[in-house]
Image (tube, rainbow, N blue to C red; front, side, top):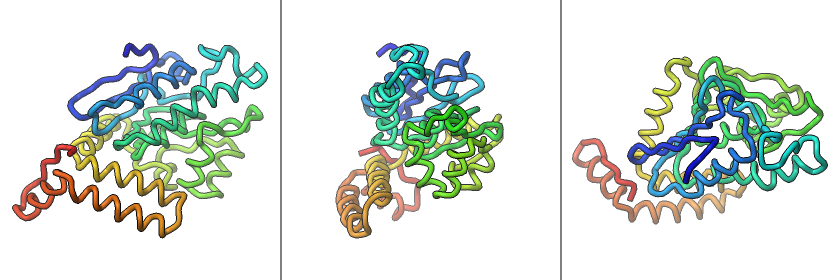
Length: 261
């Protein structure tokens, strides 16, 4: 598929998705949301995904006036339609990806851009980057799954602070809070993110996929549900070629070479 607002590149088992509207700090127009959803809908045999932004920003939030919904912020019901038809499906596709997702935040991650950044399994950010829920400043409420993502990541008090006060949270503070995996020097961001994504792309894919599913179950389910999910996941992972390779590598005191099978 030809994309206009994102770049999609494949390097072996790793797929890289780059938001590509640098002149607007990669503000997410409805078209961009649709293209992100499409890229994640058909991952082919990719075993990990890396998401980042072109230029000086990760994603400065929704750009509802660009394409798709017209001047949605000003039209009655426009924001609701854009969320239901474009933004929520895109974030959902990222959250449900059957492979690990790494987000490399190289600048502002605001509004729905913050949601996208936090939808990854691992979020790294350059030290000049920040996370922002600015909705309160214009009389709106956080969307794109931010309320769910923030509350589970950093708890009620800090999520309330971000949403109700609209403060910028820098990368190092975000790491200290547990909002993200790691804050790194700007110059090292892409190298570290790529190394992590490559490691995951060459890991035991079935086991990693099952871990993602079990974490999701643990967030919303009871311990008995987790017991069942873990046991079933262990049954499937234990029958995989990667599990056999991992066991042999352990016995032979060598590094395992996983094939994602």
